[in-house]
Length: 325
Image 1: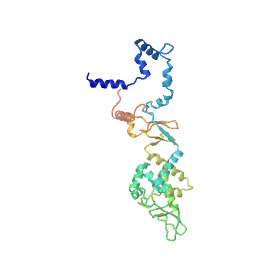
Image 2: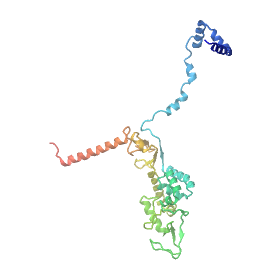
Image 3: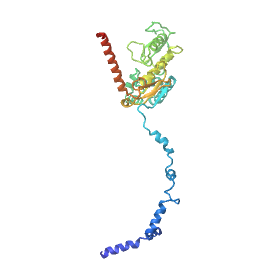
Image 4: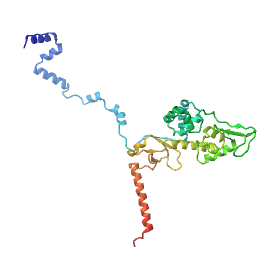
């Protein structure tokens, strides 16, 4: 060892000071070290400690049970869904309209028409409206600056209804944004007929080839006090459910409930979105057939096609062959 290395190591040893604990450890002999290790390992009762020691540290697992239960893998047919009655559906519509009305700065009637046109998809509607307001409103037959709520006006001497050819100063008429005017009685009869045919928000102006929509406010104004008004509201609700891809009517006879299920269509190939209505019926949200767990929709479709083909084959055999005697 060189003189430099010797001096360097001497300095290290001189600078380092042992603590009392470390000094004690250095002075322990083999038997003392073994005894200290034994005392640290075993408890005073001579065993390896109480079995509850680990439980005291880790707990009994009860606190983790809700988390573990939440992590349990769902079965392919266990999906989240919600059931709505007609009143709930109307409230859901109103909530969506109320949310978008201030964003678009339009009337409630116009906002509702646009939502119907865009199948209640809020983001595409907002994007289209911000990019081209006029073109978006034109999709529902409205000008870029829609007028206020429609009202029945009183005609003048020059007014003549183009349907019944009645007119005069005392005749009430309805005029839409397109400018076409028809008397209140003719418009009421026209809208009532459309409602009985099952239409709702898509009812257009009574003038031939006019694309302007009558609007919800105008329809309800003309149908006020008539039995067709309730039918009109029912048609609106049915349109709402039909236009939403995440909703479907319960297929059970005379059932008025609708079911909402957020499972995307892309997942129907490996899931069986089975939902249960309040009426007691269970059906597959994907194919709208009765509950067919555990078979997936594509397998059920193939089976139905096979049964149909077998039935057609059987009918052909019966029609074209003779029975064996």
